[in-house]
Amino acid sequence: MTEPTQTPDSPEHSLLGKPATYQSEYDASLLFPISRAGKRAEIGISGTGTLPFFGMDIWNAYEVSWLNLRGKPQVAIASIFVPADSPNIVESKSFKLYLNSFNQTRLAGTDALISLLQADLSAGFGAPVQVALTTADQFGQLRLQELDGVLLDRLDIEVSSYSPNPYLLKADQQAAPVEETLLSHLLKSNCLVTGQPDWGSVQIRYVGPAIDQESLLHYLIGFRDHNEFHEQCVERIFTDIMQHCKPQKLSVYARYTRRGGLDINPWRSNFSTGQKPSNARNARQ
Image (tube, rainbow, N blue to C red; front, side, top):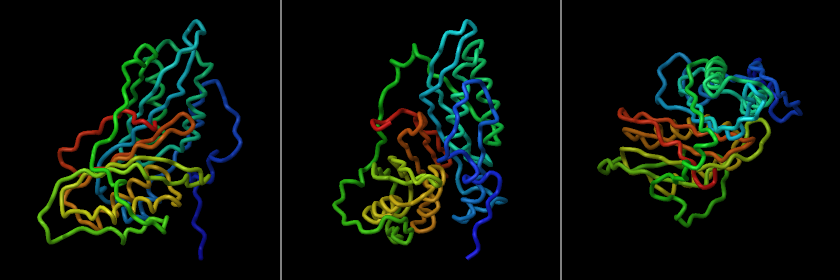
């Protein structure tokens, strides 16, 4: 079998899983973009066609710090909103190294930080991103909020397979369409490069033939030994459900727990009136 071609932006060329020296002076070159095209091709999404969804990746960075002009440390939480049609993702360890490069960097204020983050991250992702800061005086306003939906985890199923199998998915194509929201906290996948576990909750909202809930839960648990980045897992779930259950409308939203001070929360939808989901943290975040 022919080995897959590695390009300069392949994950294998990043610092992920390798020793790295943390730089405390601002350095935008630390960001490592990875093209979305390769993984999308695996699930049948052409790089030249129209995407079957819209959406965004919501990043939350909890370890953001810099110095004011008098040298006093400042802290904040940064939320970054990346459009799903951006050509790239940014590898998360490089994102962390980049954020840490602000630690000993003097800035005039939060506006200066936001300006730098938006410029650098827009260049890395290849599309305009939005950045919001929650400063220390606003921390007390943050609240936990769980995803809503019918909990699939209540089902007492027997599981023997831990690789995603889209052929498990089924829906009653003869019945009248339904609109419902389903939820599971049992999503687990693994980093594409290091194999480290990524834990998440996933919310699936759809309009269409009723999806068999047991088969959907089996399918989601099947990601447990699967190696892919967060964004890629959510897009795989979306395309598999569309292909095998044929809903008229579908939205898939995953809230992953943080690693390295970052959480990544991808959302993909084809609802014509879809509004971006809440960025409220859940209990495991």
